[in-house]
Length: 177
Image (cartoon, rainbow, N blue to C red; front, side, top):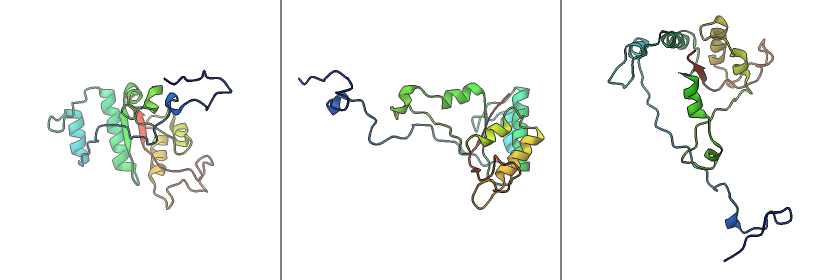
């Protein structure tokens, strides 16, 4: 049997490869369920969310606060989006369950979780932090964000200098409260 030298500054990098933990040469994609996509009218979507539907496996939403948040989000998308938009509403705990990962997740493709990244260095997060989805400031920012441009970026002459040239990519992840 082969002995492995003790780790010290003079031996680092001189141990047999089999004794060194390494990241796999090919990273595997996270194993997540296939998304269910439904093409519905606004009326059908609201009826399914607020009355429930066994056909689409959607439970009825009974919490008035959650119903209000979802109603405002539907109106935001249907009445104010000037281009593509994605909004996801969930409890904070649900977001944590999906996006927080343990240190071992990075090396284990079978249990890796989806991640979130800011493509605009947190510009929209900072701009909308603690502003309710129904607030006119949120509506205006959403409308601006979904306005298409040739390069999918905020214009270089935007009144908010922090926005200038930043990407307009991504989704809105909102808590129900």
